[in-house]
Image 1 (cartoon, rainbow, N blue to C red):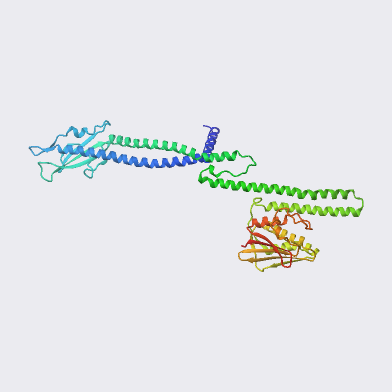
Image 2: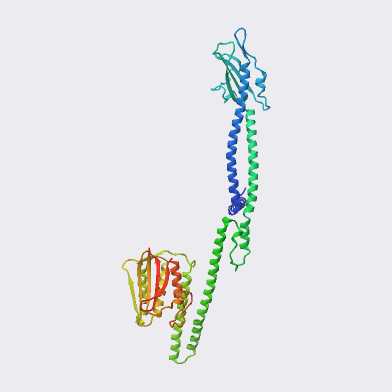
Amino acid sequence: MRNNEVRPIKGRLRRAIAGLTASLRAQLFAWVVLTLIGAICINLYLSFQSANATSNLVTDHTLLASARVIAEAVHVDANGTVQVDIPPAALEMFDTGYGDRVFYQVVTAWGNLVAGYPDLPQPKKQQTGEDTAFRTDRVRAMMLNHPIVGLSEDSTISVTVAVTHNSQYAMRSRLWLSDFTKQLVLVLLAGLVTIIGLQRGLTPVLRLRDAVRERGRQRLDPLEPDMVQTELRPLVHALNDHMERVQNQMAAQRRFVSNAAHQLRTPLALIATQASVAAREDDNARRDEALLALRSSTRQVTRLASQLLTLSRAEPGSRRPRSDTVDLVITVRQVLENLAEEALRRNIDLGLEAEDTLVNVEGDGTMLREMLVNLVDNALRYTPANGRVTVGVRHDGGDAVLWVEDSGPGIPEAERGQVFERFYRIIGTEPEGSGLGLAIVREVVDGAGGTVTLGDAAGGGLLVTVRLPAV
């Protein structure tokens, strides 16, 4: 067979094997059948040993009976000579139709051959069957010592009878084949019952499969756990939990896209209007004013787009999780240095209170930095000129605590649970903002396994406290 003919056959075999390993029904059936076959192989081996022992036992009893018949026919004549007339019954009992050959030997205690084959080997023990070779045949032999009337009390004769293995092997094969047939029928019946049981047992699984397949793309309502067996109900509950998470995530994405489109629409329209005004204006002062407004709107849109990107990266599952060891003191100091110019421009006292020791946390270093930027930037935005913003870092038991305190207007207690929602802004706030800063903070803190809370600062203002597991 050529190689180009062998390759398709190998490919079909691989596909067939892959199909068997991918099928739960085939795997369960294979495990059951292989277990049964293994048990039956062991049982057949034991059955063979049992059949062999039975055939040996029957043959030994026949040999012993034949030797007794011959021994009882031995007598002493008037001249004191030991004589024997072999009874036909002693040999005919081996005539079972399998063509066995029978050999015998009668020897006196002093070694004289009375009858039979002189070179027939004697077993080592009397009345115990022994397999041996005689001339060109394999035989089973047995020896019997028997006293003779008319001789001295210690005078005995030894009678050895041997027979070929034809009938013994036939008996052993018949006994073993009988067991083999029963075992084969047992395997077939067990396989049939297994197939029926698997078909009935997997029906709920197939019903679950069909229920999932028949659902449309938008159907994410929970499945009924009672449709499958008890062992599979955790799987259904896991599917329901997964669909609920997907549903919540889809709803959050829809809200996010809708809100983002709404937030971007207004500044983009404003940019287009300001650009048109600047293009039509002949007066240089008014054109410069329109361009400054255009630059401010562009910065607002750029910041909004940057925050949207940061929020998208902070969401669970949006990127591969990172496990960086971050020193909060160093990171906070770098963030404050970058925002110091804005604080100086508005004459805001921007300070840091930190311990001399390292305050390490584990998480995504980039996202933790973004969290700090948003916290400090929000504090600077809502703090009036000549105010103060203080950032602190410390250890508290097994946690690292980061707090940002400002002298701004603060957040009413009734709205503190809502300000973490995306695009939520308190009515009446003057500084420009997108309402994404605290939403980004919460996503990053949740991803790092921490908590964030809002409170009142001493002397008025807002206090934001972030607790993260320290390392």
